[in-house]
Figure 1 (cartoon, helix red, strand yellow):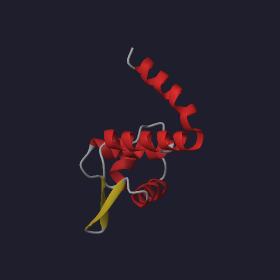
Figure 2 (cartoon, one colour):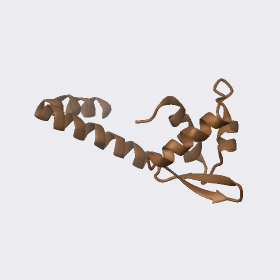
Figure 3 (cartoon, helix red, strand yellow):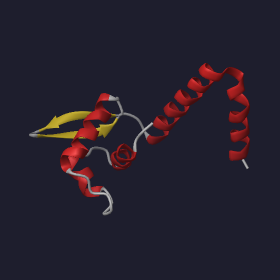
Figure 4 (cartoon, helix red, strand yellow):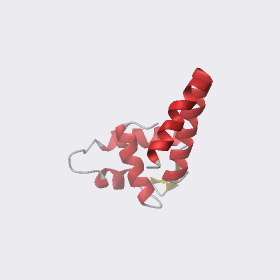
Length: 105
């Protein structure tokens, strides 16, 4: 799962093959302009989580997503479902299948 700023950063990263921190800061919507260092910290944490990869390019770094948005969402969904089933067993299955049925309508 991603926080609000992490999600905004990843939206930019998923839209481009490679990005710099400065490019992400510039791409964020006008109502949300966090400091350069805040975005850099978030991007480095996303590297630690394995969601972004970082490559040095001269004196700056270029970042790229390690997976597509779809692959990321599948991984998150799988983690949530596995946790629900591990914690609540079969009681977690009925609400999940109900949600799947509603989504198909």
